[in-house]
Image (cartoon, rainbow, N blue to C red; front, side):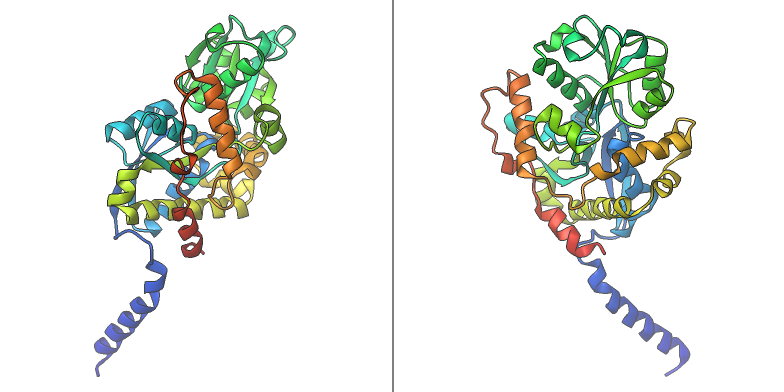
Length: 341
């Protein structure tokens, strides 16, 4: 046997040994279109980490990530067929199930919403809580998004209605910071690093903070699953390996986030995410890091909490009877735990 033959046999043996690691992966370089509404936000950090660290590629995916103006827009893209999978708020799966559209979450990213509601500092002596929001201009990532829903929930809980204030879509990055600094809005319902920047610059006074377990419980009465990956059931039926590969990549990102330092996380994202202040971004990561899911699996009590909130806020959902078991499929996250090491 010559040296070339030996090398060929060794290569074949190495490939055979590597086969178990490939179980559950999609075929090499399967293309997939993903949607997200505000990618630089820490709400979607696992998506960026999976992209930047090559975790989707590890499982054979070539992911094209489309960043929309808010969560509602990315949902529209999924329904319209221009994206295959969305990194978005869990609540959208409930809304779609109520409308007879079989869209399901397949992995949890955030256990808490991590949404903060703050008032412009100049108004802080008059605006003490959501009960004082009547007639104000409130900035959210986009109308209909999770930042909007959370703020409306706080208002309704305080005895107001959604139309008691004006909601303005201000996007997810520097544009949101600018809207508050220019005085275009009175109140903001948003996420880090936008909130961290406004807090550090003393532009706002924080009224509600769901970056922590306590803050989430104070507003919602318990846990409240937030960002996740969700897809059409049709996609799960036709391309389960592709969905599994996407979940594997995101699960690997969650594992990496949970074991990494805030400094390492800040170094892994694009510099533009820091909004000109890397140290501030690091503090924002530290404030939210415990909110990222460790298992990728949603707690049933949290799913019910989200549904109860939506039923109380949306007349279209008030009499609905959504089977929550159809809003989240845990099988992909369970399998990811056995595949990702």
